[in-house]
Amino acid sequence: MKVYGHAVSTASQRVFACLYEKGLDFELVPVNLVTGEHKKESFLSLNPFGQVPAFEDGDLKLFESRAITQYIALNYAGKGNKLVFDDPKKAATMTVWKEVEALHFDTATTTLGWELIFKSLFGLATDPKVVEENEAKLVKVLDVYEARLGQSKYMGGDAFSLVDLHHLPNIQTMMGTDLKKHFESRPKVSAWCADILCRPSWVKVLEMKKNQA
Image 1: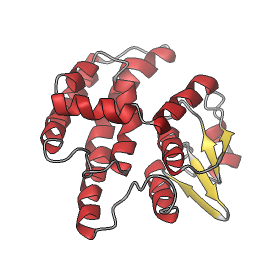
Image 2 (image 1 turned 135 degrees about the horizontal axis):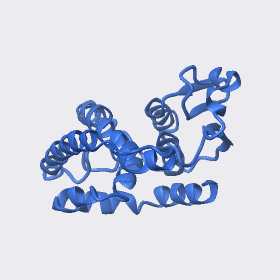
Image 3 (image 1 turned 60 degrees about the horizontal axis):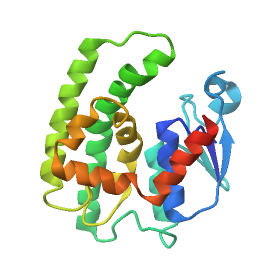
């Protein structure tokens, strides 16, 4: 298996974490985001949208991090941690919360990460209005999460799954900003974050990020 990406990429981090959860060997093919390697023709043949990661497993080529993690979890079901549910009803519930992460949590936190952290790296100014709007969206999502986590230990059910794994990169980003207060002020959300952020798979991803930065 090959992952074309970079350890600072939150989307790449999802795939790395999934592979580590499953205990699978893979080759990281670094993509230089600073020089725009992901926009060159050689990479566009792997992902026509010019975004990392891209993934190969034999003759299978995939892009979009959540599609890649879904494939890994299903195709290597017998390896490592389960990450998905066999029961159709449990699987359906997990799918609901996977959609919530992608459509609500990710959209707000990705925008906030860009405004509060990454813009400054490119010499750009933070837009306070955009921060305010997306902070309000995040607060609403976390209120829903607090209620959900009163019903089950993890977002997708009673076991750690792809839903929780998909949250890891952006939770880590938010913990590096003042917005961590919104996570810490909600007891169940705070406990859930503490639980998943210390998983061995995620610790390995952070070590990758440190080494590749």
